[in-house]
Length: 390
Image (cartoon, rainbow, N blue to C red; front, side, top):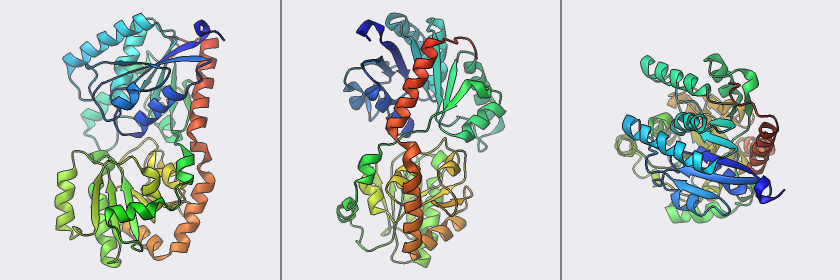
């Protein structure tokens, strides 16, 4: 295939921050087969992954300062117009948008610019049961409106497919499931790296360690993790806890840590990129989210052979099989979650068995497979365009 015959694929992402959707979008743009695809990324210049985005080899990267995560009507209108101008210039064959803000603005702009095929990835819907009803209704309405400009949806979980169909956002034939991928190799090769990480962070080598990796925002409910840690600590005084991430709830977490008597047991490390070492250091991986698509940290723990205790929300139970690869808890149930963590920390053989089963099942989350499935979808849509079918 000549350079002129390659499919031009433009990905639109709101902000290149540290998150599964963002990391996977950058990976996809960086690893699409250059013999078949000519990729572009449009995103905000503001974000911890912006420098990494700018260095993607063989891809055009366009930074739009108007793309912001918050709802700002005038700025959002300026972003939409800037997207139209860029798409009219680039003339992509396919536009692929990600998550809520970029999904709404990018899909509208793609239709205005006459892009033949528009694909949208749902990395978890923006509406959920913990929102006020009017807010939830607004997000559902926005997603239904944007669906009119969408030819194919990608969901990372069966739960999101069911949710989208149930809320009238798409029909079953308009959506494909492509798992959110991770790079399995470094996680599988990380054995021994946790020793050095514990030494660096001052965590005793033999201390039972429960780890949570998450943005410190309401969706992830990290305060439940603090309460859970307090219960585990009361039963296992030698246990330690590591919370990796940062965000708006950090001050509240610091106060809760002090009130729970965990000042010497719960470490807040901020953001770190050495996830394989973190997983190798952990005995149990915990996730207390209120809602998710299918969280990246779960297959990361599985690939490292670590059992997971996570909330039974959205796509998470598709990876965490209760009693087989870990345990599922009810959102906000720090008491029930603590019981599972205590069991696994007291019974390392049981923890290793659950972790080994997770490692055996994790191949469906391979990031190379994710890219290949997207390439196959692009090929199908380009051969049989269905613009306007949604």
